[in-house]
Amino acid sequence: MISTKNLDALIKQFIQKDRQNIVADLKNYDNIHSAATAVGKNGRKHDHQRRIRPTDLEDFAKRIDQVARRFEQAKSFNEIYAIVNECRIYKIGPLAIYDTAVRIGRLYNIEPQEVYLQQGAKWGAQALGITKNRVSMQELIATNKNFSQLSPHEIESFLCIYHKDLRG
Image 1 (cartoon, rainbow, N blue to C red):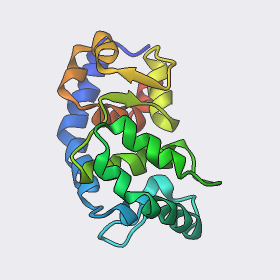
Image 2: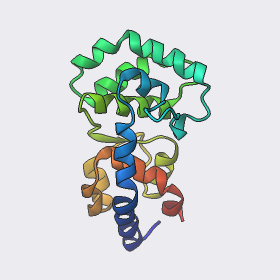
Image 3: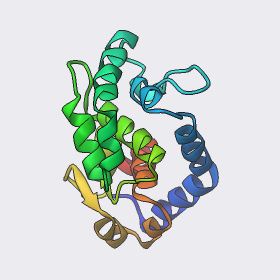
Image 4: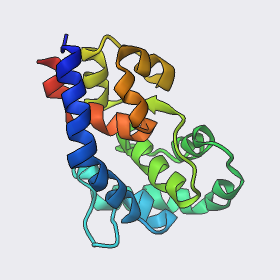
């Protein structure tokens, strides 16, 4: 298990080095379709979705486009996530669902209130003794008070980026 001192240093490093990139990345998607295809204003596909064929992302985006009005009524990130998940097709996994929901949520100023864990973030959380698929902010702050400086989405990004460091 990583020491408190080393975890504090990683959180500080994330805030100084990575936070601005996380914010900039979310601003790269200015409509629901681009959020679902993972292709931003810069014309590049998000690295998390690099293994998904463009045609599969386009099919996924078409399904999301068909229910786009439902996002306007959503009052929480969990609702947005559920709508996106209903649109899932073969080849679209949990990470793409989460990333798409986060990008769409940003369009409506709705952020996750808990930390969703999949892929690298799940590995990072496991290094901290967390084995659930979702975890509350209170539970994470109980592992280290410095997590209170981050939003749930930032914590998910932190756990993903630093999962190897956390596992030692």
